[in-house]
Amino acid sequence: MAVVGLHLGDRDVVAATLDENLISHATTDWEGPSGKVGTFADRLVGALENLDTSEGDPIWISLPPGYIHLRRIPLEIAGERDRRTHLGWEAAQTLGQAPENLTLRHWASGSVAIWEAVRADLVAGIDQRLETAGFHLGGVCAEPVALYQAMLEDPETWQAGVALSADWVSIAAGSSRALVLAESIRMDAPDKQTLEDVADLVSSRIRGRAERFASFSVAGSARGQVDDFARHLAIAAGIEAPLLQAPGSTVSDDPEFGTRVALAAGAARSSKTGLPS
Image (cartoon, rainbow, N blue to C red; front, side, top):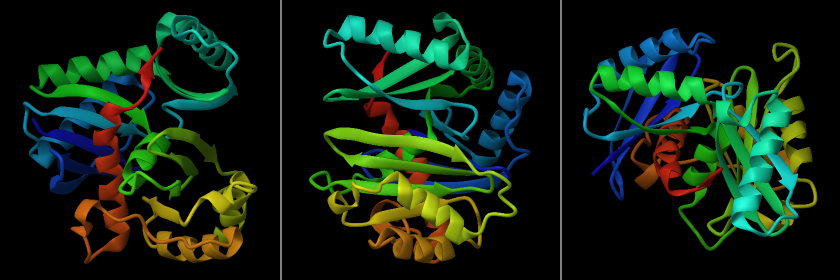
């Protein structure tokens, strides 16, 4: 069975359909995410109908930063059951929610864990609305998780990447064996921050780790800025910063759009990672 991944932008949705390889990709306009669960779900269904998505394929959605949360914390608990309880408590305390009101996954590596949390009512609302319309929700993921999955074409090397949007920058780093960094940062007064400022911010997040990475893949929905940002990041981080490529390099005529297809494909692949908490 194929899997569909969606990357949600402010004004458009990009879809990628995969089995082992990229089968197809498409894009459509939409009104953007909403803080109201019903409105968010209705807009999403409208986008899926415009994308002509197969009703039988599970759909994995990369939610915009702000709708799903990530946190990297020290991990001192070895037992899996106790670890899940501890991470659920940490997420609940951080977000001010009861654990049962959150849907969580986590990635553990050595003495560190990264948890991913989203409001359970948002996931349930999207799931119910999609089911009513004949679609099947596989799950949701944070943008850095989709970015991480999109980078893992060479599983033996360490990879780092960044996704740029109008108000947020998402960062991910790791290898096929470990996700070691995943975060989304809201930019202060984004209209006043230059691309050089954002490149310096991203570079500071991997300072001390840069020697692990051969390059720093760049993606995002900030149309017209992604390529320029990649050049600034290469200077700030002191490593190569190529644009993230869609699987099989199938979107060569528009490299910036190709990075969005790659993120959508990463969302589809996120179904294979993370442990429920």
